[in-house]
Image (cartoon, rainbow, N blue to C red; front, side, top):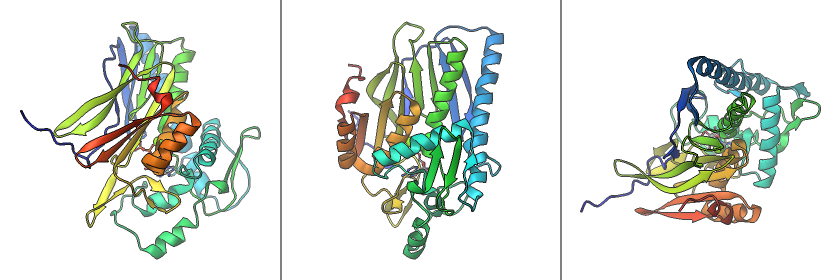
Length: 336
Ligand code: ADP
Ligand code: MG
């Protein structure tokens, strides 16, 4: 019998769907990744074209609002501001800032969309540059411009502002989830009630598959030469998102530096390779919490998730195998 070795430092898989018979799939590209919309019922060509256009328009609007890769986006323009005045903001930016701020407070700052300057410094921002460990003095200087308390969103006034002119916002850890929720809303408005929406591994499902069963999503782990599916989650009118330290990283002097930054240390998270999947009412929340729990790690993150009743699954590389920890709330969504 062949022995299978776990590859601990390779992509600790995003969520992959399995066993999801669909009658129609609409695919495309957005936010630097792929999206897919699976429908349980067949649709004719005219409906497919119309739906495709509506979905593309929704995603394009989100990108115009919050892409940090587009210097003309509303967010890029906000980031360039040097003053502390309130400015009118789009619905999308308001909703994302507001929810981000709540999750920052709830995660005691582990989730922080103002990490932008640190993300850039460590080489994970929009600018292509060589990734290397910055000097301590530079890290110390740049971290002064980070702090979620310096970003404000007033939903009723429809305005946002900086309370420190140096802050730079990066919504990469929540925008895909938000995009999934918005696409789901497009489908809802078209009277479609059985679907699975995915953007780059973040998903949301409603209703049932073509076979009349709940949509099922498998959580993958890397093994030599590929992935295997571990736990299977049944998604009923909920979202799921995964975040991991092996999704994007560089190595220097034998050490692993991930794209997920701990705002407390101003450095990439330190613990062993970890991936966290979260199930929540919205994919936006699942996305933000998945990132927050990766920052907090397998002990503190697990305790907080358990205390808050979050449905979370932690996969930590432990030598050649994986440690899997599931919160009570997640257990309710597991199949088998
Ligand atoms: P992915 O985009 O790979 O699915 P995440 O949702 O965890 O993963 O988002 C990671 C991205 O979020 C990073 O590339 C960076 O732009 C940003 N980020 C890094 N650390 C944090 C943090 N502590 N809080 C919020 N955003 C972060
Ligand atoms: Mg995230």
